[in-house]
Length: 506
Image (cartoon, rainbow, N blue to C red; front, side):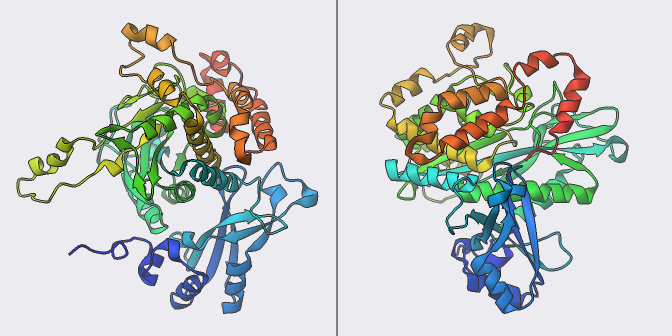
């Protein structure tokens, strides 16, 4: 007999209330607080810098708790977002019940809950990234009938004092992919983070050691990754925000640093935020057709590729993003897609398309005798350029815009065919094919120009406003990084200063 989804769910509220988080009510939250000795409540909401902010309350009585959960609280928007003026800065933060979780770091029993922003009229704040993402997803569904789900691969570096790390079993430089103890030093930190994130509602696929590891005169650097399952856009973005906060909290407890910066130093693996996506119709995946990539998926990829240069304005937002996006590396720079091809901007990973894939477990386990099972629902396509400097909500919004655009392009399937590659484009024998492909921007400045050029697509159906596009471009241009890679070539001290300036981005 199979267990229910509730029985094995790591979220303590799900376990206690015996219902999925999406069904949490105000009364459920109050019940959990009263019956589990919760003393404090923390509202959390993302700031303009991409990090979660906090507003803490001591719970006085049930009426106080009820009021907080019913009306939220006021915050100073001008101190959270640079574009909000002080003379009209009051915003409401209102809790989303489904996001409630028990804070694992507090000695005082504390319940945390994510919030959305609302304006003085009590409507969702139009300029909030989350509001834009919701509008983009809803518009996609209204215009096409498809629902977009996504997930992220969160890569990061642990940075520790070299003399405090046991190096009896050193890992091979830049060979850390899926390495295990004792050749990795901080997989316990990663495993604790995975458990805490899961208890907070994050749907984790797996975690592992990543390629990057190296030492310098002072520090030991170790790259790790936590990858999530596909979920709604809102759940996926929220989970990534919570994950970054929890990893930082754990790193602080361990006495080390964690950095999500896209580049730590030249010549070593950078940290990306690969995003996998799939489309659903009536709750079922439409990514596979007759054992191959469906035309629906090809249209979606064509739309994203068509505005990929503009998408970098939301997915690669700092100068060091473009120290990672350099030619002839695994981080892609050319606008194309391919099957299982890591040199492509959009990749269709190895999937469970064929009948033969269902016999694998039987071959590995002679006593396996279950009937045929269709695993094609796991199939996705992966956008490989973004990094953790991204505005997560706006990045997901941009993907939804691109996919919708793909369905509105009359020549989408022709574009998909033209941009398909089946080879490693960085090999000399394929240089002619490489020359046919357009390039992603090489700096924040170039990204801003691409966004302005493509702004009509982002603004269609009032998903993005012209003010948002102009503000995003202005912020990118102000970073003054045009031709930065060329200017910094060979200047390691200047590169180090730049990396340090963005070490704790997002």
